[in-house]
Length: 266
Length: 328
Image (tube, rainbow over all chains, first blue to last red; front, side, top):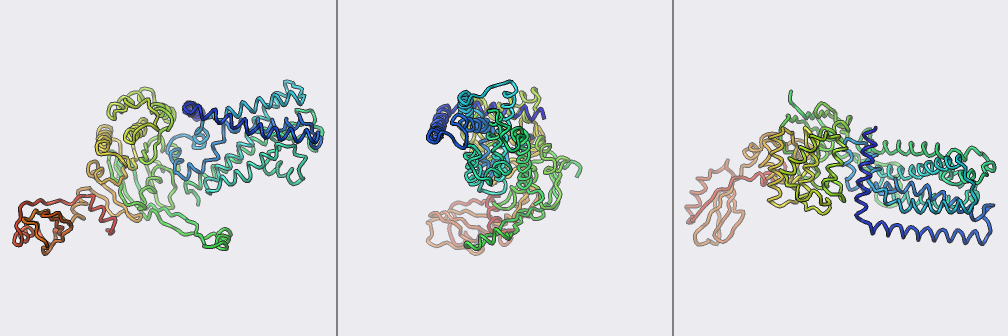
């Protein structure tokens, strides 16, 4: 276990060094991302400005939802985004390399990409988050900070679980990009807005189907001291648990995929 | 066998390939009730390999070579049969098996593309938990034998194919594996680079007693390196024995090359086939069971004036090519 962890950090470090060779790429990435988010952000603020509020949420509060979502996404991208292209590795036979080395192949997959590529996203996410919480008038207490940490990790795990699932499907099918762009990506966009603007069905889907509502919607209630308004206030505290459970389930699916890939039991 | 490092018994691997029906309705039906076609890649292969052997594992594309190697390395689970590698069933104890073997896939590198070569070695040192002393000693030895010094600090993506292959070989051997699988280690290399790789393979087999399974399409590799070859076709072993024996058993054809005076218009000799002509030089292929070389030369001499002649022994290359084309 310790050996696995040590190897993980050595591999990640190596990838980071490799990434530094493409500095221009890195900056280009950061700039394009900032441009994308600014566009979304401007659209959002224009909407809220026009209508004053969305279903009882003020602009600053809506920005908080948005900021929480991209905070989790920031962590998630750093660690997991490269999983989306796992089917390419399978198709090109590159994954076999991982299987002839004495190290957990999932760890090798995770460590197969530089986290630096995601740091631009992460820095932007944190900045946006700090600004949004200041504007939304969040009152910080040590307990809330601890809670925020749990929410950020839990949210990153929930999103990570979705990406691990995408990669796991790569063992079975060559259509995983479609799955990402038609299921995961739209669901992520949905939670940029307060959940209660959607129909019951969508709310349910984002709670128990693809539980992205735990990334920002429920936790935001706690940060804004409004947890009591939720039908089940407990929901607001489940994010870390949901994160761990969904990630474990996704990893289970991945292991199942690996079994089928090597032809065991098929 | 007591000193067997690999035992393969009755190995079979079948793949289920979903059958597609044509048209939209066909696609729909395929989704609802998928039908499968069974393709047998490995059809009852058995062999034993002793410690320290250097064996050529040869066969045409699609013969089942890589499937066998995948099962031996633990990447694939067979449909049936028994495989024991160094006391382990590789696909049941994949990680443990991986610690003891080295693998070179000539077509794709095992190294980290964007990093200096030495960084890949360092990473492998951690992954295989190579003791510092062993690592240092091996790195020095391989740097010396393979001339890695000139590009240790160059990113792998900037290496020439020959350099990359040398680095890949070193990487596969850093952890002192007892058994190494080399899949096309000379593919795409020029003669000089091939020679260097072959010398190294021979050296580690002799000096370190590393067992080597070599798959290749280059029969020169086999002739220069292996004493034994296992030839497979359609998922079965068609020959397993000394490389020299293949020539005797399958190389019935020899070629007589004669230079004829005056470059006659038409050349034909009973008992031999003209397979090539260049002005006065004629290549005659004959079956040594039907006619001896002396008889043939005599016959040619009766009809034409021979200026010069040479006799070509069958090249294993040609023999294998014929086996691929015609079957055994």
